[in-house]
Length: 87
Image (tube, rainbow, N blue to C red; front, side):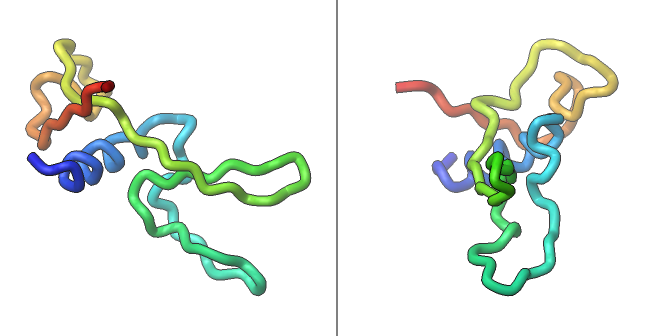
């Protein structure tokens, strides 16, 4: 599997993480704003002075040996699987 396909799968899976709730959210353009919020795996955080910072957040893997019924990445879930390995 190529890197872009893995990135798409793992970025999509990361949107379920509570700390990445803004990933995949649609936002209207604002005057003077730059960028957009449509990128997969892009989460938004805010600086103390109110500026929005876009952060890339993906999972390292969505493979799991457990079968928790509440989890989208559970073993029995019929979803595409991918893994990145640290170098």
